[in-house]
Image 1 (cartoon, rainbow, N blue to C red):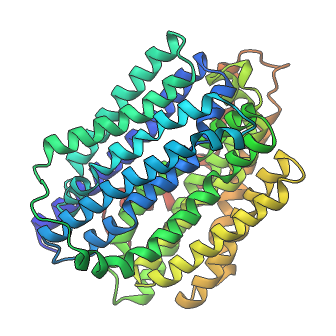
Image 2: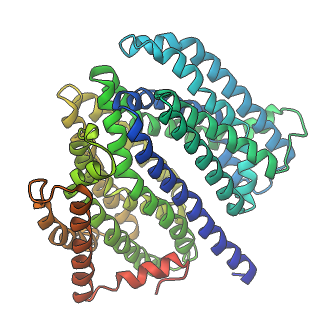
Length: 482
């Protein structure tokens, strides 16, 4: 690889990590702050509308961004055509949802505030549409530094405004303003720092040329968002908005740390595996090291979240959010394998099996939707356990399918994963018994559950001769694994 290109790639990976990780950290911080001023019902009101936002965002983009990114000879006509398409679809979706707002409120047991709230909140995806092509230009130029600065600035300002509004008593509207303002600021900054402007008219033939690739991504993405947000929809409809609010926090607490690990590592894993295109045995050896590295990080995090859920919630939030605790424990089980599924995605992309990847994701999302519909008849706990168990089974099933292609037997997968599950349990589970009765201060109890367990975990791993920490540092530096 050319030295300048290698340096650019490493820089891009670093800034991509700063972008994704920084946004997650900011989101985490503002979650804690806003929880002080907001009720779980107010959080739940926004959570039940997330599915409409997610589907509208997918429809306005319709997979054409990915098509433009992968199209090497994309020209001005392509960019302008997709720009006009994005704007048109976003406005059409907004108008449909604007007039459907009373029916949305009626669906959620005639909660009248949802009419005005949804009409305002849905402006976010209209603003998002104006920055999609500018974002594509940054990605194609591998300018993740500018992207990170824009994203972090928009997240910080919108989160700060939301915090002030929540403090002043604006309640649920502070959350709505946060999302709308973030979308507006991000698109505005993209227009300021990316000088591209549409210069040609809309061309239907250019749209049709990219349609075949885009439509597969479109339907798969829609199913993915439905499966991801259906839990909140069911809770808002069948149970209480407060339950949806509790779940929103439990899901973010359980998912955000694992997502940071997954997104930051996956941005490095794909180029690592792609550089070994003609070395099948070496690629498998490297991928197995990656699986062990991810297991080394994600399973102790999941076990710690499970045992310290009460300390985490009560120390970082307040007693009014105690309903998050049992949900967080269940969510932690399912999200523990999320980074490993991301790694498998990178492997399939590296070996050119995007068709199989789309099929597996579609099947996973469809089954998850069916599980949610069935388990919702029995209660919230059954729903959450259904999704978490489904995630574990998905991990086993997908690694079995792909493993047969790359000679990575499921027995070998479990052999690479289980030692870290066992070490995590041995290190952290004894501290589960540090109850409120023993240590009343939630912060002290949280520290006493985190620090000794972490020390024991690292000491045991080192004593047993694990080289996984060295491999982790190698991956994060963007270097080749031996």
